[in-house]
Image 1 (cartoon, rainbow, N blue to C red):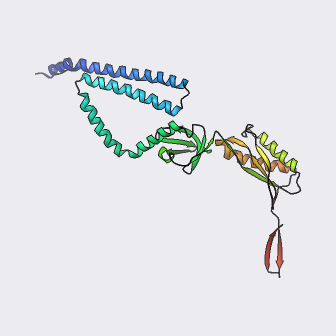
Image 2: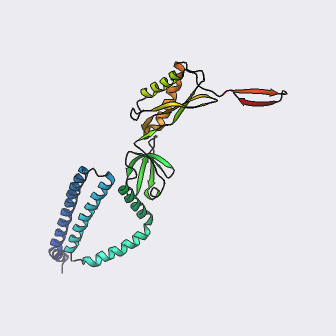
Image 3: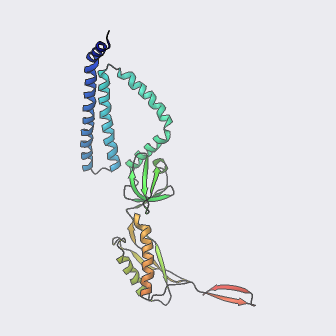
Amino acid sequence: MPARTIIADLAIRYGFQVLGALVILGLGALAARWIGGFADRRLRKGAMEPPMRILLVRIIRVVVLALAAVMALDKFGFQIAPLIAGIGVAGIGVGFALQGVLSNIIAGLTIIVTKPFRVGEYIEVAGVHGEVSHIDLPSTILIHADHSRVVIPNKKIVGEILHNYGLIRQLKLAVSVGDAADLNMALGAVQDVLARNPRVLKDPVPVVGVSAIGDAGIRVAVMPWTRGIDAVLVEGELYQALIEDFRTRSITLGVVRRDIRVLNGASLTPSPR
């Protein structure tokens, strides 16, 4: 039988089946896209967390595509039940091979459901810290002040002690002024420096006051609030501004003073003053 006749016979016998399968797959892809988009819009109105919303939309699209693939295979006369059983057995083997990945995914689901932190908050966990940039099923991404990224596997987060600073952080700075310095002027200078810095939040109100009296003079606590990602930058800016402002106002900074006593011209004994 000529090859052309064989090809024509196969085209007649299976052509409509292939065409029907392709049409089903195409319609399934369009349906998955439309249904996923519709679900995404409805979930956005419900103010659902982005990670959970993205996960649900992906699951919906995968389910619709899987149904379309099953219908397309049925066009070719495939027995679906043995195929599903084979996929189940293969899935068990893949599950054992990907235990680490699956544990990260389960931990990611736990984080998404329990919400110990959210995108935009500043957290410290597993020895690292930063602003939460992205929460996905396998990992969580933090951003440092130097714009570097830290990728943490989710299984390293679940079950660990987590410090969630929220969207803002309170800095704990301090400056010492001399015993003879005008204390009210010093406190006013600190307040002015905080008010001029655009990164310092006005609400909550910064905490400023005397915290201790020691060898270096009067210790003034300076505890303003700022965005978590700006904490490192603000700390350096405030210390520089405080030094410059104190010098301008002739406010003496506190220094530790010691007396050196010479005994028999040989030994030196420092003592605080």
